[in-house]
Image (cartoon, rainbow over all chains, first blue to last red):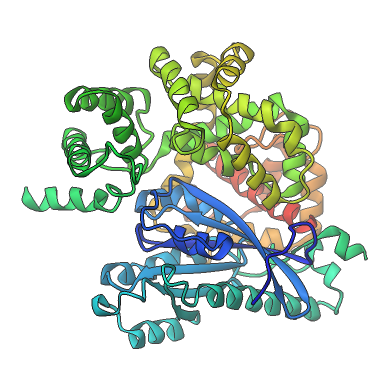
Length: 217
Length: 330
């Protein structure tokens, strides 16, 4: 169990976005992960909300800045501005509402159109505690995730099931992508943010906003 | 007709229980009122229909007045004071953010410099403030005080003044933050504890008298083309982005050339021409843009575009590239 740490000391800072249709439980996933809270009576997210939490990944402390976005379609023009610089995303649907799964494809397109090609994406089927109401089979979702080359997990923010795992997995994968990228350009992680390699096909290459103090150390 | 009704009801059904949840007045009857108000409005003005955030405004008004009065007040706010804000494209909401960014850069250059350094865009924070008209952002009493002035003045000036006042009040704390997450978290929590509503309203109204509707209109005119252009691009479904011979591809190949990038940066200093997103720290002389434009071989797609539009579009692009670079350097 990763302990909650003081915000001051961390090695990496990763930006992660939570996207998906309205009412799938994005805000509760965020509050469960960052504050271990869940509210059956949560309020609609207007625009975006934000929270952070630091966890340990291998021997490093990774601080996640997580942007929770409004789900309504028309907000996409506004929320896509928040995708900039994101290195990870949790694309959430509601396992009890098939339409939210059908919309995943459009979310994915939107996300890929605004972020770096190396972004780590996890498809998240939330509300998995409502097994008797399940409208999206795990197999379908898994197949979709494989086809689209994303990770996949079913979660329940209410029962605190897999929430920790989902975020930790995304952050760990980001850590690996970033480390690999650092190796690719000569093993000096500090060289990465200088911008010599700007990834083809992606609009952003802010994969690792490494803490300055750490680079210098 | 039933189908259209169902569609509208569906658009807000999830937000009814998520509007001031657990508020005693929003019991079953209260929620029915809320549902009726939102449905009536969506039918009254289909070009807006229902947009998240409106549930909170309707809920707020229903707590203060009878249903019919609440409806007409709601109509006045959305159709008049916030015309173009909550429509499908949300154009005016986006324009206001660019305007606010320009104002904040003008008023608090040091604060913005610090936020730039942390990689925080002011609009990330101010966007939700404006869209929610501070509901759920400020404490309830402060929300009502701000709404009071806003309704009295009958325009959106108070949005800007309040946001500027919040930056004035909390700027000194913000400049001590060490990363983007801390800055945003701090500002969120400080805004949420703005209990001295008198101080807030006083700072907003007396401190920013020069922020007038006329000035805002002027700035909106200036920034609107950039927003319209982006909206247009989006509505084409990103065709330009994907087209191998498209403008975007040319820009990206441009981006990948490090020498050009450096040159471009050198060229960005010492001009008065503010970038389309109001980013004053990165400026570009028109000559440099022209050079860049002429460097791009004009194909049929470009010929169709108005040159002015292209310039604005390129500015937006250049701006985001510079932002990326800035984040990368950080």
